[in-house]
Image (cartoon, rainbow, N blue to C red):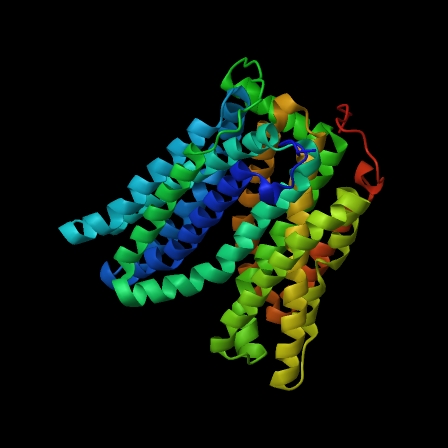
Length: 420
């Protein structure tokens, strides 16, 4: 008997292939600009350290300013795909303006900052819409596999993006390399526009933006499994970014890892992410997302502990870092995949967009504070102690997961709000 859309494997579903390809191409283009835009500011526009700080902050600021409102908007819409296409087209125009302004001789650091704000804002709105869109076009029993596929996109981009960026900057120059990001957004928009699967989302009734936002915040802290995911995500990202603030300095200066080999270690982490996505999509069908979350949080500190305690000859350091980095890359993707899947499963349908937006707001927003904390502590107590402190801090995420309803293998599909 011929399989229906609901029972076909995702890899055989045309629209999912389009959606996955669109995201992979778009994210890879964004990875290229992460190198090309700062290089443009430094090498061509003589940006000051203060301007570089503002430029870096501009890319992440929309997550703090717009995430909650974007989630409320996503819950109100009946169809999300047109908004997603519009976000990609706006981002395309913004990215293409960089090489055009450079060729016309009017490019400035302020221009780059505005472009970063526009693309960052479009990305926040896109992610909020895409979360609800996924729930409406992918059957429930395939959502973990679909989420794993999107996590694999980030791993592909993290492996391919930096190398591609380096080649393009060398061949085209930094401003023209940004053109690739614009073309990636345009390609993504066309692919999304080509999808045919009807959207099945029933829009939530709105009682005003502020009320909708507060309702999403309240749901995120009163649903016990969602609250556990939020707490674990904030804990992990805070200590992980504190670690990343000193990681490069420690690895190069203290461990003596050659700078030329750092790219290899980063690539291995990305490859681990691909492996983690592949394994998670298959293991989740047997043991469930909850058990994967219970296991992954236990292994989160492994790479940081290895870095903090490592000593010996260079070959031994590289071997240990390669193994732990690959494992951690897989663990991170497995955790992120199951976090998204459990949120889709447990959050009430009319609140999914706002709960996802609250997670983005808190989990991404805490990263700036974590970076500042890591750098400040390193000045006070030294690099190695900070690394060991962050390993212990990340281990606290186990408390959130292991003391929540997620410790049970078969939770109900929609939880009833309970007092915080």
